[in-house]
Length: 261
Image (cartoon, rainbow, N blue to C red):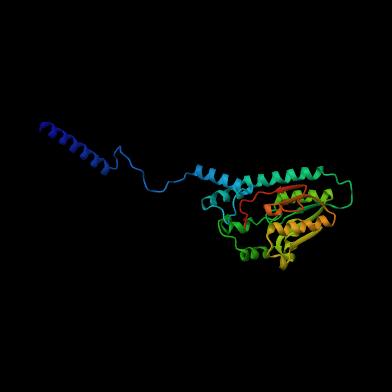
């Protein structure tokens, strides 16, 4: 019988110790917490840098806003030196290419296409007031901003634009803006320093339903049918550059806030 009493005593002591450990928060024995895992700043920065790369390279599925955790990241990027450096790099590369094209034909058929919003004109003041892409895009609110006609020039793009004009290219401004915004767009462009374009193309009421890639492809198709050689095309969205009658070289400007409907 004595052996059974010893076993019982050992089991009782073990059970008591185990029970005390469960109730003591300082115990060596730990159990997984059900609280959500906190992501530190370095992890957020890495995640958002990866997300921006995927967005800029058109590798993401259709999206409507930037990730909530990337709001500060995008804000710091577009207000900092990185965004300016990226824009300058695109402008410089496009300028080098523009200078190498043989324009000796002299027939005035060598063309360069520029988008307007986030390519020539910056809507950064608008996005500062609308969460840097964190808010769902509101077309009516954006129209109100366009109608103010105060969008500043993107400096590296203005430099490229002037270089393209000086080299003798025909310049076409192809934008998704409404035809009803023609006058304010012309005034805004001129005030921002853009002059001497050959044609400003805006969406007619009948074209409002068309997706951007189709709309811009059709306009480029018309240029090609008229005998133009589209040498360069500058835009901040892939819909500015893809589709039919693509340019000899396309130049994608950085823009982590653009939306793919």
